[in-house]
Image 1 (cartoon, rainbow, N blue to C red):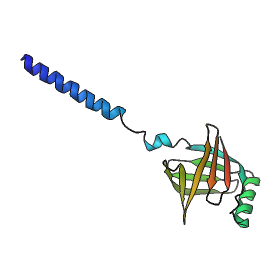
Image 2 (cartoon, helix red, strand yellow):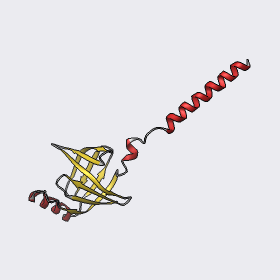
Image 3 (tube, rainbow, N blue to C red):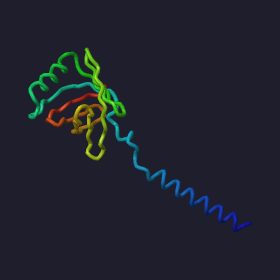
Image 4 (cartoon, rainbow, N blue to C red):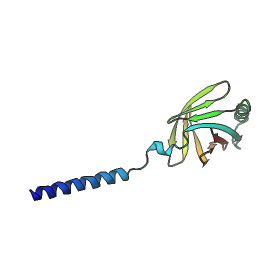
Length: 134
């Protein structure tokens, strides 16, 4: 009887240790790395050296026409202007610290800086997007 109790206690302790190691050894989930999720306002734009003129003028017009609000959801990016709402799917690459916009061609946005209240993203054409938390 005593031997069965010792075996049962040992088995219970072993199970507890394995479960604890598994729980505490887990890496953070993808959601934990998505700290940029939420609502942001486009504060300013610095047009990149490789940006074409039409793209630059469009961005500046959007910014000057009453502002652009950006909302990152888990896998969707919503951009709102006074006159329109646009939706894009994206994926987040934690190793490269970038967002890949999924439209006709994947366009990366690289995280330059990230604080609780500000976010700077750089496009493939070197355009910088400065966002402030809403």
